[in-house]
Structures are given as C-alpha cells and as structure tokens.
Image (cartoon, rainbow, N blue to C red; front, side):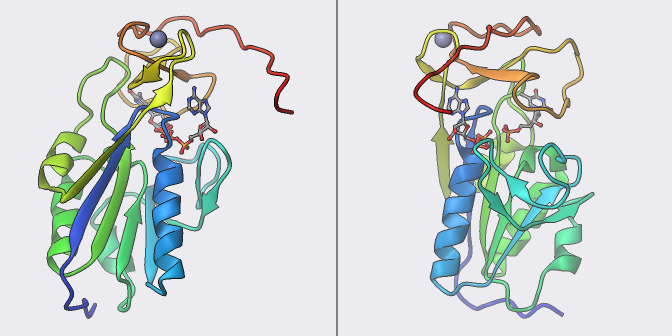
Length: 199
Ligand SMILES: Nc1ncnc2c1ncn2[C@@H]1O[C@H](COP(=O)(O)OP(=O)(O)O)[C@@H](O)[C@H]1O
Ligand SMILES: Cc1cn([C@H]2C[C@H](O)[C@@H](COP(=O)(O)O)O2)c(=O)[nH]c1=O
Ligand SMILES: [Zn+2]
C-alpha cells in the first residue's frame, strides 16, 4: 500500500497550444524537483508514441523517462511508495477519469503536475482540461509563435485532413497559429521557411 507523505498536496496545470512549451515546462519542473531530492514519477498516455514509446519528449528533443499508461487509474498501481511528485504529459488524452485520479493524488499529499492541450484543432475546450484547470491550485498557460504572422499563438491548426478529435501528430500534422490566422477546419500548412540562423 502506498504511504503518502503527510505534506499538503496540490495540482499544477500547464496548458496551451501545440509547440507552446508545455512539455519543456513539465520537464523543467520535474528536473527542479529532482534537484530538490524529491522522488518523482512521470506518466503519459500510451497513445502518445510520436517520438518515443516510453520517454516524454519535447518538440525540441528534451526528454524524461516516463511510464506509458492505457488509463489514468493505472497510476494508483504504478505509484511507488516514496513518490512525492507526479508529472503527467498529454493529460487531455486520459479523458474525464483523470480528474478524480489527480484529485486523489493531491488529496493524499502529492504534488501533481499535468501538461495538456486546452483547445482541440477547432479551438474548442479539450476535455478534461477545463475540469482540471478548475480544481488546480496553479494554472500556467503557454503560448507558441504563430507560423503565419509571428504573433503569440494559442491555437493548433490541423494541416492533415481528418474530422476526428484525436489525431496524434507533430509538425506535418499541426502548426501553431494565433486566433486571427487559425481556421477551425483542417487546411494546408504554411510553406516551410529556410532559416539560416540555425542548422
Ligand atoms: N512556432 C513555434 N513556436 C514556438 N515554439 C516552437 C515553434 N515551432 C517549434 N517550436 C519548438 O517547440 C518547442 C516547445 O516544444 P514542447 O515543449 O514539446 O511544446 P508542447 O508540449 O507545448 O507541444 C519550443 O521550445 C521550440 O523549440
Ligand atoms: C490540436 C489537437 C492535437 N491532437 C494531438 C496531436 C499531438 O499528438 C497531441 C498534442 O501534443 P503537444 O505535446 O501539445 O504538441 O495532441 C489531437 O489529437 N487533437 C487535436 O485537436
Ligand atoms: Zn497569426
């Protein structure tokens, strides 16, 4: 049986569009917890196998070891007795059940850091993010850079043809856009630009 620490727990939500830096921020917070000698476990939905089957990987290739799960409730069985901090990436893919799981962990004294998309490709709230944000102590919204106009981007433009809500992908399937440049239906991507500043 897991012995939870007696310290107060809480929920942190990191939300925003694709490419806004949610995963980088999750990894940054996890790394700092490790510096603080905290016992940390990171989880992700198994469906997120874009860059790696097990690791959480940012678009900029930062990585952290994680445990892939089919369902959020598996966290209760995978949790080690001395874990103090739980990180969850792509939390929107876990569905409504993740809210009760995250609340139970926080209520037992764990710090829970969740990163996920707050809007789907049409700009609609991506459940269960609104519910998680409502019960969280801390909410951080990240913004990407609109690839059309360069303004701050809070939307994820789908650039492959599909009307399904869940389509796993990265560059080539989505691009970050601002509210002015985003359109709710899938559309063609912007042409790639040659940047001579970076290799
Ligand atoms: N248009 C863009 N705006 C911001 N960052 C971008 C953009 N395109 C690529 N990136 C890269 O994506 C990184 C963020 O990746 P990541 O943390 O995985 O984002 P998220 O988890 O929000 O999708 C940035 O630091 C940058 O290297
Ligand atoms: C907008 C949107 C995105 N997805 C998928 C695409 C990616 O696999 C993830 C988001 O990853 P990121 O770390 O935030 O870059 O979600 C989706 O299934 N449906 C959508 O509407
Ligand atoms: Zn724009």
